[in-house]
Image (cartoon, rainbow, N blue to C red; front, side, top):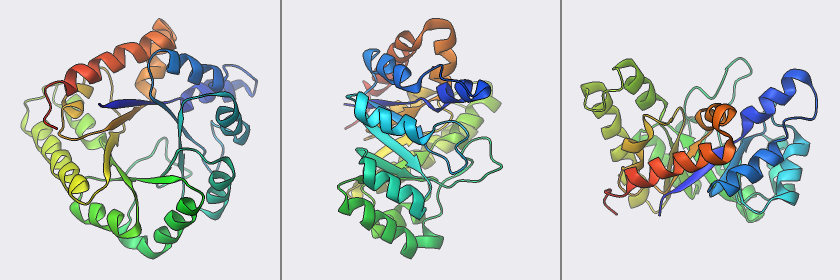
Length: 252
Protein backbone atom coordinates (compact mmCIF):
# COMPACT_ATOMS: atom_id res chain seq x y z
CA UNK A 1 0.00 0.00 0.00
CA UNK A 2 1.27 3.47 -0.87
CA UNK A 3 2.72 5.45 2.04
CA UNK A 4 3.08 9.14 2.88
CA UNK A 5 6.26 10.63 4.28
CA UNK A 6 5.79 14.15 5.65
CA UNK A 7 8.68 16.61 5.44
CA UNK A 8 8.63 18.98 8.42
CA UNK A 9 11.60 21.19 7.48
CA UNK A 10 9.48 24.31 7.20
CA UNK A 11 8.18 24.02 10.72
CA UNK A 12 11.80 24.61 11.68
CA UNK A 13 12.00 27.43 9.10
CA UNK A 14 9.33 29.33 11.04
CA UNK A 15 11.16 28.72 14.31
CA UNK A 16 14.53 29.79 12.93
CA UNK A 17 13.04 33.06 11.70
CA UNK A 18 13.04 34.12 15.35
CA UNK A 19 15.86 31.86 16.61
CA UNK A 20 13.54 30.62 19.33
CA UNK A 21 12.15 27.27 20.53
CA UNK A 22 8.76 27.21 18.78
CA UNK A 23 7.18 25.78 16.74
CA UNK A 24 8.84 22.50 17.67
CA UNK A 25 9.47 20.09 14.76
CA UNK A 26 9.15 17.13 17.14
CA UNK A 27 5.65 18.24 18.06
CA UNK A 28 4.87 18.61 14.35
CA UNK A 29 6.13 15.06 13.73
CA UNK A 30 3.85 13.67 16.42
CA UNK A 31 0.86 15.55 15.03
CA UNK A 32 1.68 14.34 11.51
CA UNK A 33 1.92 10.77 12.77
CA UNK A 34 -1.46 11.10 14.48
CA UNK A 35 -2.87 12.37 11.18
CA UNK A 36 -1.71 9.22 9.40
CA UNK A 37 1.85 9.93 8.25
CA UNK A 38 3.80 6.74 7.67
CA UNK A 39 7.13 8.50 8.05
CA UNK A 40 8.82 11.81 8.77
CA UNK A 41 11.45 13.42 6.55
CA UNK A 42 13.91 16.12 7.58
CA UNK A 43 16.80 17.61 5.63
CA UNK A 44 19.79 18.43 7.82
CA UNK A 45 21.50 20.92 5.55
CA UNK A 46 25.16 21.78 5.84
CA UNK A 47 24.25 25.42 6.54
CA UNK A 48 21.63 24.39 9.17
CA UNK A 49 19.13 26.86 7.71
CA UNK A 50 16.12 25.10 9.26
CA UNK A 51 16.49 21.65 10.86
CA UNK A 52 19.21 21.55 13.52
CA UNK A 53 21.28 18.62 14.81
CA UNK A 54 19.31 18.56 18.04
CA UNK A 55 16.03 18.29 16.11
CA UNK A 56 17.18 15.09 14.43
CA UNK A 57 18.46 13.65 17.70
CA UNK A 58 15.17 14.41 19.46
CA UNK A 59 13.11 13.02 16.58
CA UNK A 60 15.11 9.80 16.80
CA UNK A 61 14.74 9.57 20.59
CA UNK A 62 11.21 10.86 21.19
CA UNK A 63 9.08 9.70 18.26
CA UNK A 64 7.96 6.28 17.10
CA UNK A 65 7.61 6.85 13.37
CA UNK A 66 9.94 5.97 10.50
CA UNK A 67 12.61 8.65 10.04
CA UNK A 68 14.04 9.57 6.63
CA UNK A 69 17.12 11.80 6.87
CA UNK A 70 17.79 13.84 3.74
CA UNK A 71 21.48 14.66 3.53
CA UNK A 72 24.36 15.62 1.31
CA UNK A 73 26.87 12.83 0.70
CA UNK A 74 29.56 14.35 2.94
CA UNK A 75 31.70 12.77 5.64
CA UNK A 76 30.04 14.97 8.27
CA UNK A 77 26.53 13.88 7.33
CA UNK A 78 27.46 10.22 6.99
CA UNK A 79 28.92 10.37 10.49
CA UNK A 80 25.73 11.91 11.89
CA UNK A 81 23.58 9.33 10.13
CA UNK A 82 25.71 6.43 11.38
CA UNK A 83 25.38 7.73 14.93
CA UNK A 84 21.61 8.37 14.87
CA UNK A 85 20.62 5.49 12.58
CA UNK A 86 17.47 6.70 10.84
CA UNK A 87 15.50 4.03 9.03
CA UNK A 88 16.46 5.63 5.73
CA UNK A 89 19.04 8.17 4.55
CA UNK A 90 18.28 9.93 1.29
CA UNK A 91 21.25 11.37 -0.59
CA UNK A 92 20.44 14.66 -2.28
CA UNK A 93 22.42 17.38 -4.08
CA UNK A 94 22.85 20.51 -2.04
CA UNK A 95 23.73 24.11 -2.88
CA UNK A 96 24.14 26.97 -0.44
CA UNK A 97 22.30 29.45 -2.67
CA UNK A 98 19.31 27.30 -3.62
CA UNK A 99 15.94 27.90 -1.97
CA UNK A 100 15.12 24.20 -2.10
CA UNK A 101 16.61 21.16 -3.82
CA UNK A 102 16.67 22.11 -7.49
CA UNK A 103 17.41 18.83 -9.25
CA UNK A 104 18.32 15.22 -8.83
CA UNK A 105 21.64 13.82 -7.69
CA UNK A 106 24.04 13.15 -10.57
CA UNK A 107 25.09 9.64 -9.66
CA UNK A 108 26.70 8.96 -13.05
CA UNK A 109 29.28 11.68 -12.48
CA UNK A 110 30.29 10.56 -8.97
CA UNK A 111 29.46 6.87 -8.82
CA UNK A 112 32.67 5.70 -7.12
CA UNK A 113 32.43 8.20 -4.29
CA UNK A 114 28.71 7.58 -3.77
CA UNK A 115 29.21 3.82 -3.73
CA UNK A 116 31.50 4.33 -0.74
CA UNK A 117 28.89 6.46 1.02
CA UNK A 118 26.19 3.85 0.43
CA UNK A 119 28.48 1.14 1.79
CA UNK A 120 29.24 3.11 4.97
CA UNK A 121 25.54 3.71 5.58
CA UNK A 122 24.66 0.07 4.91
CA UNK A 123 27.35 -0.99 7.35
CA UNK A 124 25.39 0.91 10.04
CA UNK A 125 22.15 -0.82 9.02
CA UNK A 126 20.74 2.21 7.20
CA UNK A 127 18.75 1.88 3.98
CA UNK A 128 20.01 4.35 1.39
CA UNK A 129 17.72 6.23 -0.97
CA UNK A 130 18.89 8.49 -3.78
CA UNK A 131 16.97 11.50 -5.09
CA UNK A 132 17.32 11.46 -8.87
CA UNK A 133 15.83 12.86 -12.04
CA UNK A 134 13.66 10.50 -14.07
CA UNK A 135 16.49 9.38 -16.35
CA UNK A 136 17.34 5.76 -17.14
CA UNK A 137 21.09 6.33 -16.85
CA UNK A 138 20.68 7.68 -13.31
CA UNK A 139 18.45 4.75 -12.34
CA UNK A 140 21.02 2.28 -13.65
CA UNK A 141 23.82 4.11 -11.81
CA UNK A 142 21.78 4.01 -8.59
CA UNK A 143 21.57 0.23 -8.85
CA UNK A 144 25.31 -0.04 -9.50
CA UNK A 145 26.23 1.90 -6.34
CA UNK A 146 23.97 -0.27 -4.19
CA UNK A 147 21.06 2.10 -3.47
CA UNK A 148 17.98 0.25 -2.28
CA UNK A 149 15.52 3.07 -2.97
CA UNK A 150 15.20 5.66 -5.74
CA UNK A 151 13.08 8.74 -5.18
CA UNK A 152 12.16 10.36 -8.47
CA UNK A 153 12.22 14.14 -8.67
CA UNK A 154 8.63 15.19 -9.47
CA UNK A 155 9.42 18.91 -9.74
CA UNK A 156 9.33 19.04 -13.56
CA UNK A 157 5.93 17.34 -13.54
CA UNK A 158 4.58 19.69 -10.85
CA UNK A 159 5.83 22.79 -12.67
CA UNK A 160 4.29 21.60 -15.96
CA UNK A 161 1.02 20.89 -14.16
CA UNK A 162 0.91 24.42 -12.77
CA UNK A 163 2.05 26.10 -16.00
CA UNK A 164 -0.62 24.30 -18.03
CA UNK A 165 -3.47 25.48 -15.84
CA UNK A 166 -3.71 22.28 -13.78
CA UNK A 167 -4.67 20.32 -16.87
CA UNK A 168 -3.54 16.73 -16.27
CA UNK A 169 -4.30 15.92 -19.92
CA UNK A 170 -2.03 18.57 -21.43
CA UNK A 171 0.80 17.27 -23.60
CA UNK A 172 3.51 18.62 -21.29
CA UNK A 173 2.02 17.00 -18.20
CA UNK A 174 1.40 13.70 -19.97
CA UNK A 175 5.02 13.70 -21.16
CA UNK A 176 6.38 14.29 -17.65
CA UNK A 177 4.18 11.53 -16.24
CA UNK A 178 5.44 9.20 -18.96
CA UNK A 179 9.04 9.95 -17.95
CA UNK A 180 8.21 9.17 -14.32
CA UNK A 181 6.38 5.98 -15.29
CA UNK A 182 9.28 4.72 -17.42
CA UNK A 183 11.88 5.50 -14.77
CA UNK A 184 9.69 3.91 -12.09
CA UNK A 185 9.43 0.72 -14.15
CA UNK A 186 13.22 0.64 -14.52
CA UNK A 187 13.68 1.12 -10.76
CA UNK A 188 11.44 -1.83 -10.03
CA UNK A 189 13.04 -4.04 -12.69
CA UNK A 190 16.42 -3.41 -11.07
CA UNK A 191 15.09 -4.51 -7.68
CA UNK A 192 14.89 -1.12 -5.99
CA UNK A 193 11.99 0.62 -4.29
CA UNK A 194 10.24 3.35 -6.27
CA UNK A 195 9.47 6.51 -4.28
CA UNK A 196 8.69 10.01 -5.55
CA UNK A 197 8.53 13.57 -4.31
CA UNK A 198 9.14 17.31 -4.71
CA UNK A 199 6.58 20.09 -5.30
CA UNK A 200 3.64 17.72 -4.91
CA UNK A 201 0.49 19.31 -3.50
CA UNK A 202 -3.24 18.80 -3.02
CA UNK A 203 -4.13 19.38 -6.69
CA UNK A 204 -1.34 17.54 -8.50
CA UNK A 205 -0.62 14.52 -6.30
CA UNK A 206 -3.16 12.00 -7.58
CA UNK A 207 -1.65 11.31 -11.04
CA UNK A 208 1.69 10.57 -9.35
CA UNK A 209 0.03 8.37 -6.73
CA UNK A 210 -1.50 6.40 -9.61
CA UNK A 211 1.87 5.53 -11.17
CA UNK A 212 2.42 1.76 -11.22
CA UNK A 213 4.44 0.49 -8.29
CA UNK A 214 5.14 3.78 -6.51
CA UNK A 215 5.56 2.94 -2.85
CA UNK A 216 5.99 6.23 -1.01
CA UNK A 217 5.47 9.94 -1.65
CA UNK A 218 7.40 12.57 0.30
CA UNK A 219 5.55 15.87 0.66
CA UNK A 220 6.39 18.82 2.89
CA UNK A 221 5.73 22.42 1.86
CA UNK A 222 2.12 21.89 0.78
CA UNK A 223 1.22 20.04 3.98
CA UNK A 224 2.89 22.55 6.30
CA UNK A 225 1.20 25.39 4.37
CA UNK A 226 -2.24 23.75 4.74
CA UNK A 227 -1.52 23.05 8.41
CA UNK A 228 -1.30 26.79 9.12
CA UNK A 229 -5.04 26.98 8.50
CA UNK A 230 -6.33 23.46 9.14
CA UNK A 231 -3.86 22.02 11.65
CA UNK A 232 -1.20 19.38 10.99
CA UNK A 233 -3.36 16.34 11.66
CA UNK A 234 -6.09 17.42 9.27
CA UNK A 235 -3.60 18.52 6.59
CA UNK A 236 -1.92 15.11 6.68
CA UNK A 237 -5.23 13.25 6.82
CA UNK A 238 -6.51 15.03 3.71
CA UNK A 239 -3.28 14.46 1.76
CA UNK A 240 -3.28 10.79 2.65
CA UNK A 241 -6.89 10.46 1.52
CA UNK A 242 -6.03 11.99 -1.86
CA UNK A 243 -3.02 9.70 -2.25
CA UNK A 244 -4.97 6.58 -1.40
CA UNK A 245 -7.77 7.57 -3.82
CA UNK A 246 -5.21 8.23 -6.58
CA UNK A 247 -3.49 4.90 -5.99
CA UNK A 248 -6.71 2.89 -5.81
CA UNK A 249 -6.89 2.25 -9.54
CA UNK A 250 -3.16 1.91 -10.16
CA UNK A 251 -1.73 -1.40 -11.44
CA UNK A 252 0.44 -3.36 -9.00
